[in-house]
Length: 266
Length: 209
Image (cartoon, rainbow over all chains, first blue to last red; front, side, top):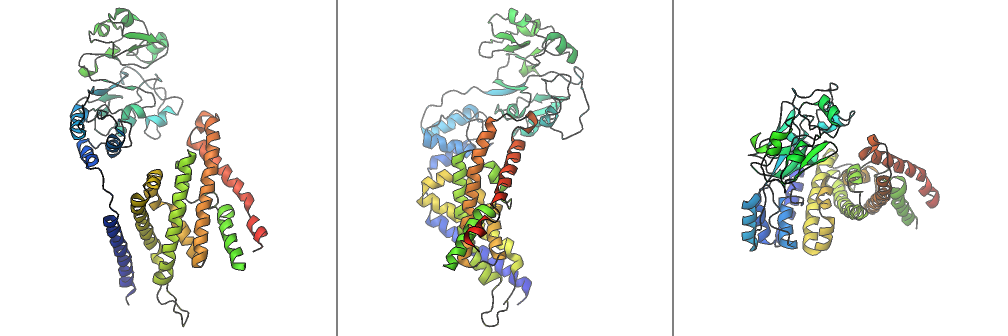
């Protein structure tokens, strides 16, 4: 017999026999799955981002049905998904606050510079490993785009050397915040008027000033001006507590370096 | 008596001297990936052992009777399709693992849950393919192959359990910053592997074969 033909026949035969065995096995040993698991999986966005704390959308659906997990944990799906799941499970949805990523760095190419030229693997993680990063400021966005690669929704891009969030696409899943080696990205409640401090520099004011003209120098002006005491300055860096902030934006006007910005306006 | 001795020698050789992970360097991926916790390391190793024995039991007859059958009268090969070994074996292992998953899901759901994601991962585990192919290469009989596969599986278990203990200590140590994480894990894996070189020849002198 032709050896080529024989080889083809043999592999096909083995494959066919295996396929038949598997088909029979899957029919004979069918395990009924709770149909709500499939319905909930269909109602979820299917991004498998892990923001709910489970290994993926299907896993989350399983924990809802089997372990009574909360129905409003899906951040990308938001209120719509929570409603849909609540409908399937027959429980109250509870409320979900939509979250958005905010980049806490304004050190664009014209505001700060580089200490050295990096010509290795184009990844923030790699650059960070080499003397703490190539920027004059070691706390800010390095602009090599680890967050861009991590984003499943095409919502974050590098513009002028700093990551910029497209809030229409952002679902607040936090994948970008998790990969950023400098923790530059913060997940904040999506509010139209509440500002964030777009700086992470913890050096003393004079040092920050030399590295970047947009950096927070820790002057405390915002903290004193805030009527709700939502702003604290720690390690020469202002921080706005989003739960206390009411969005009056006095701090935005007070800041001498313009480091406090409203993400929704960017 | 002789045959039992030789089987025992194969079994212990696979565990100590020819350990698949630490001496032959197969299956490094699960060795590094799943050895963080003791219970998952044991679960993965038991699944690997099980699939190894099953895969050997399935591939040995296929190699002997389908790929390279020997004519009983003349002692010559009827046909030689030995070069299809890798493809056919992978196919069989994949089917086997899938089948196993179905069976466990239906009849032993507790074990299925415990093994979790490790079971499908075994499909492309190189130790399984390595054991089945090396059994053929060594010219083992069917019984010898099964014993060898079981020994390889237990060897995998020993390596995983040992290394998960080592890793727990490594995690508490404070290596230099540049060694943190995977680098220090690889260094310690190399040391464990080196320690297994000390077992060379021990089985031969015990069993005298």
